[in-house]
Image (cartoon, rainbow, N blue to C red):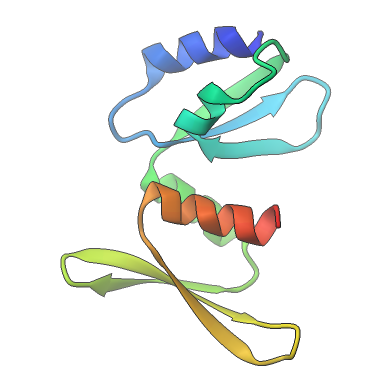
Length: 116
């Protein structure tokens, strides 16, 4: 299906809990994971999409955990949650970065860790 056809299907399948899309393009071996809003507005709307899956926050959290070799934990802060990411810098010193447990926070980790 074309990307535009996929976008039309997303519109009918999406529920309020869905923030992310996992999509695979025809002829490519990699899977693209993105915020649905970013996926919809990307250029090259006519590229072929072989399939997609809509993900909620918990499914995306599990995806990040499954892909990430570093130490990620969810921590309660006030009435919400944050993600604490422990990682080693090039100098070998352990560092900690904190992200909000939001769709944007999860995508920042994906972008920084896997697409930096």
